[in-house]
Length: 338
Image 1 (cartoon, rainbow, N blue to C red):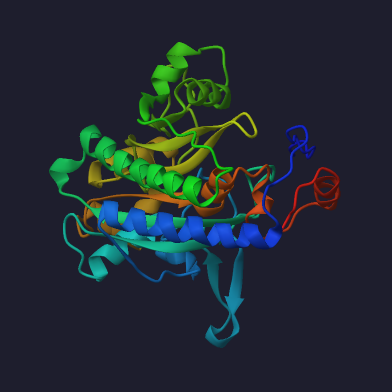
Image 2: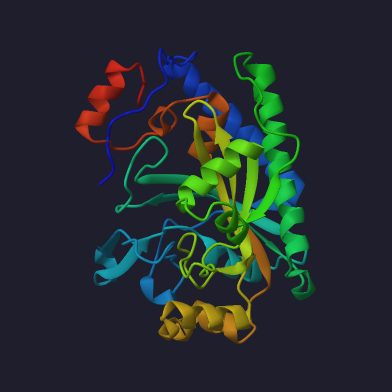
């Protein structure tokens, strides 16, 4: 369990009241959502909160999180799981809804991550924009990935410009360009540092980075971080990470990537030792070439609101459950938990 002590900047006070914060949250979300949809050519759709486990549509994230599950009485206690993310569902939806190459969808995704270790930027409640866009098989490459990352980053920059005008206390901190760096390059540069320390050093140096190729083993024999083997292609994925001066940390705002094709799925299932998943409906459709080739990701709504509104704790921009000692300390230190 993480140390629950709140590391708050000295004399921290949010310029906004709770009510003003709620109004500002809506401004951030409304503006960014529209910018993302325009820049990536996305259409908003409805999405499930829970799915049956036998479909293989739920995500294991880094492979160990337990989903929240319950039985539906009307259907003979049929088991369903609260989604961890919608990475797999979105790809299936693109086919079902008849989207074409260059078109995509996005949705509001809410999840419960019961095994999360909570702190300033982690909560058991997750809210994010999940998006997915169809690409041609020939576009499954680093150039495509970088081009889409730049469009997502453009949406962040446009939102920062908008919010800094609406709220003069918000000083712009995003650099003009995002820096691309691979996990292996960071390991080579900082061989004696932990993965999180490498992210911090790179983010602080550049302001904003896209950390590429997460999931596979590095030269050291260890992966930079875990990724489920059946949605992102580990050679064509990454995280958008920014330096957040309020807390002096590296803050991940988005995880995204080009999704697995037939070969990548088989290879990654073998590496992860879970080849039995290839028999699940979703995974089987990929192997049989029945689903479109796509790129997609998730963008943290609360993380973005926290970043743009310069908050010291994610609980200031979302409603969740926190340990009693955290609530007490937050009150003492001027943090207004929603």
